[in-house]
Length: 87
Image 1 (cartoon, one colour):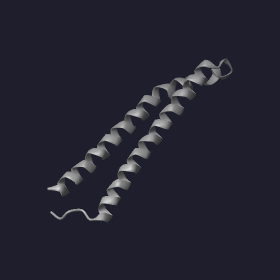
Image 2 (cartoon, rainbow, N blue to C red):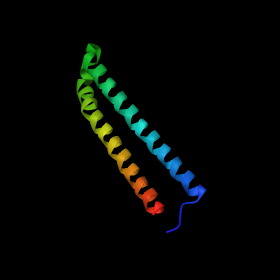
Image 3 (spheres, helix red, strand yellow):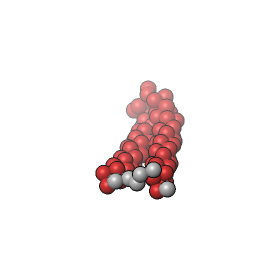
Image 4 (cartoon, helix red, strand yellow):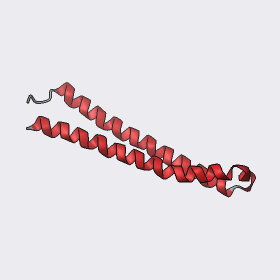
């Protein structure tokens, strides 16, 4: 199998960085959902949407788990490509 040329190596590096940026977007979403959920649950003026706060707190770890799963899945795929080309 042919070795990767410089263009392909740079594309792999860009993909790695994009994968990390995507994870950070998932993490930011997790933090916003979690903090918003707690804020809605704690503020007495927002008691009519208390269930929304509970939903956001429940949903936030799911968002983080999806982000972590995706990060490692793409990272593993990229490592397979790199090791296959190194043979």
